[in-house]
Amino acid sequence: MAASIKQMLGSDDDSLELLKVMADNSFDSILLTDATKEGKIIYTNAAFKKLTGYSSEDVVGKTPRILQGAATDKLVIERLRTALAGGGKFEGRAINYKKDGTPFIMHWRVLPIKRGGAIKAWIAIQRETSNL
Ligand SMILES: Cc1cc2nc3c(=O)[nH]c(=O)nc-3n(C[C@H](O)[C@H](O)[C@H](O)COP(=O)(O)O)c2cc1C
Image (cartoon, rainbow, N blue to C red; front, side, top):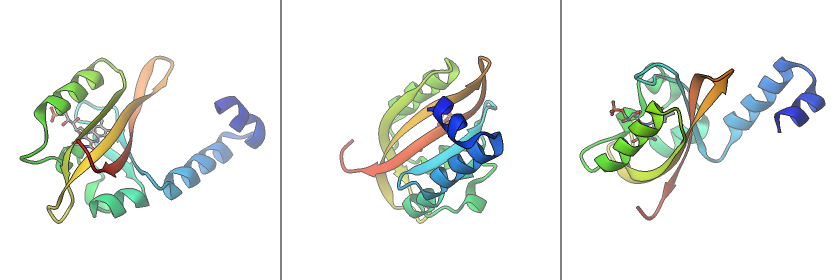
């Protein structure tokens, strides 16, 4: 995909603009964190606000842990922690909480963004689902 986007758009700025339009307008929630140990949020899209009630201003600089609460399955989070520590991918479902405290089932994937072997950021694709 990267090669065909580059061929079509030519410059890095145009490719970035395309990815931004895709992320901003995605029906799924998209969240990016930096590559620090805590994983601080650097971007969330409009679908994240629709899903969780949190705006980007609410969450940038915080960690996605703010979505967790008493009923969040600790084993799922442990599996995510292991995947993050190993630089690998994660997919799972767990109870998360909206800004107003309403619980819902989050189904999400986390993937590393790597350049030259080093992790530069993490991306999550998230949606609400009906079964754990
Ligand atoms: C990109 C990214 C997205 C994440 N999204 C969620 C999420 O939607 N729901 C959730 O419960 N935890 C999510 N997490 C997990 C927490 O941020 C955190 O990594 C996890 O709780 C393990 O850290 P801890 O041991 O400090 O709690 C995400 C983590 C990353 C890196």
